[in-house]
Length: 77
Image (cartoon, rainbow, N blue to C red; front, side, top):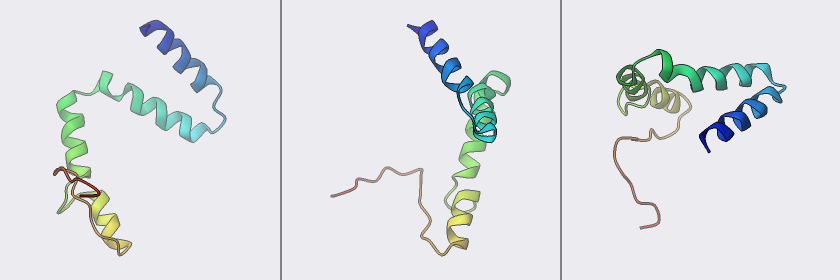
């Protein structure tokens, strides 16, 4: 099962025509193989930080409400 998923992923990536999307996708797929999971987790935490993360800073610059990724919210309740 694992090999067939790897082959399917390789075929799908080979068929992509947008080279920038292809490069970003490959970089994100292989990032955990070259960098420690702790470093990837710390990077994600800093990007998604509610008070000073780059995602919420961008949201505030666009005059949108920041989103707190670290708490679990129930929608529709």
